Length: 339
Image (cartoon, rainbow, N blue to C red; front, side, top):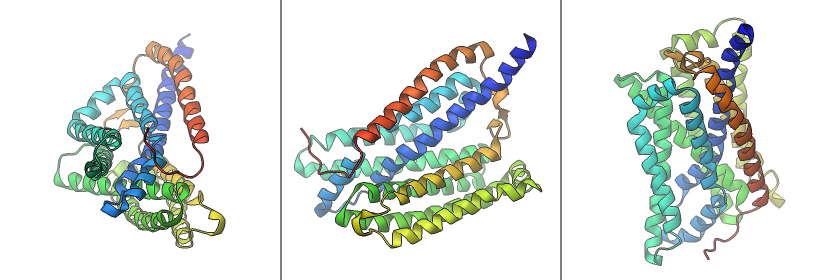
């Protein structure tokens, strides 16, 4: 019994941090692209039809995409309450700012459908501003997390760099989504937006990857200890190849018969996965870098066993719903209509 209890106490926190990691990366990909579409909204008065099409491309999905954020935070609260308290203690203000951005997006999305014609542009600007605020806040929080919540000016600069990098990354995957879902002139514009956003994202990834090992000695040791370094450096190598190949492909798009329309989006998904794997490798098993590991932060084993039953039911249901909704609304975005 003691051995069984000990094994459960070891593996249950690992299982829950894996579920939380799944929720985080799926959120970053799915809500990332619809935040990116909001960031890329053109604001010219004559571009209303393009804004309508862009919003139509995310309309069936954007609200459900945020479910993964709720799931991730819920898992953190229930399975790792000490870490939840510690993280939010440091990130209370940027988290509140993020919520303001999310509220702006939600209100603007609904009100643009009901507002008078002369007010529609105002709500589109609100949607764009909410998308930018949310992205910057999430990037800043990521930077603070990676840097270990240090209050000095260098940590603030790193967090600001992370905020810009995450915003560029969301614009990158949002542009790739538009390449997949739109046609004609808007698709051409989307390929240009995606190329520029991709280059900005590459600069951000390189900068953060260079700074992170310098400010975190533990990360430096993990990445550059021989012979593990020979395997680990495959991650940035594959990431760089994905960036370059995507840029070359986008320069030749759109192609006849819309060939390879999905390749840019799924290439960006691979880049997101590589970056996430790099972060996970850098810090696991710490759930708060340098302060708290998953076993120290975990709830009681009996509680985790009980919660796991619900997670085993809920997570597959959310996955199934997500897959089903994307299957139903596959294909190109059509002209936006409000009923």
